[in-house]
Length: 416
Image (cartoon, rainbow, N blue to C red; front, side, top):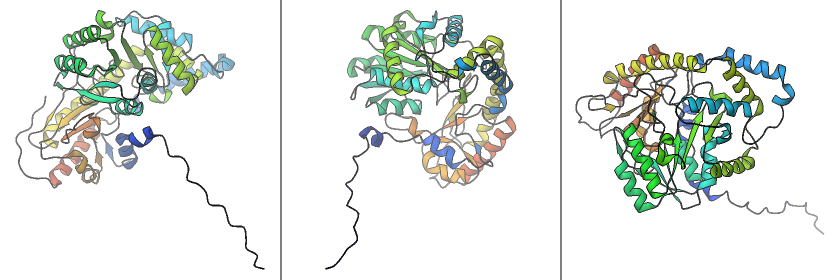
């Protein structure tokens, strides 16, 4: 008789991951940041605020006060809608900027990115059409794609989205919503003019369309006059969701954002948030409320904007020498990004590995397109480096592009 050891039973394969996780890719920006994390790399790729401009002392004092004076409350669960003191402060800031807002109009979110996810959950059924700008904020494309939306780009020009093209698509496609970053857009830095905002509001009212107006950069203005939110126009008041964030004006590590929405949609987002994370961290909310009560945030933002304006100027001054003849780029009045287009023969995705070898990086433009990408485009973030670092980064970028192996032919540089 032969005795054999017990062999492990064959294991059945596990069920597959959800289809949405297989069809929606990761963030190319995050991938680039991981590859270019070496300290010697001058990185124009990330949309990272300048850490040396954070009011670390003021924020630390706010946390200390909250944890000293009300530790039991700060470390306890909170309501899904958000801490009343923070919502009241946010409502006051929004009202002061031309859009009457009560605390109950707001839902605090874990960064404004969560607001996009909640809206996708509350509004989008698989197969629904969502309209976006072209090019569009990358993480919005991910959020709507993850929800199963059919994402369609609205054509535009140097001033942003074309209202006539928008109306044609609304009539033809019957979309559920339009997503837009109309002020200092990510990735282009463009600002949609007031007349076009009014036209977008009218189209939404006439045809029955939700507008998701994302405004993470609007306070970072260096020059020019503030343009009213789309949400402030009569035709859009009952159908616009306005998103805001402290990431660019206070600190991204706080993960504090908010959405202002009509009551029924706001309640639906609150239900979706309960399923996601119950509520945004209490201590962060209370510290932010304390900071707003004791600090002039507007004065802090003005200091940050002055520094960022100088950095934008340094980038714009160096682009004619750094980019190939025939290149064009935006000149933003605020925000964090410049969008550039190289001559047709360049593919910025294919070129990036060669550029990184020169210890500098950008984000290729292709991932920002919902439809056919323009592969000659790229995004440059100008706020993370000092003017001297920007000048050196552009010197390296110019050297890398001149050394790149691309077909011949092009003509003279220009800014737009």
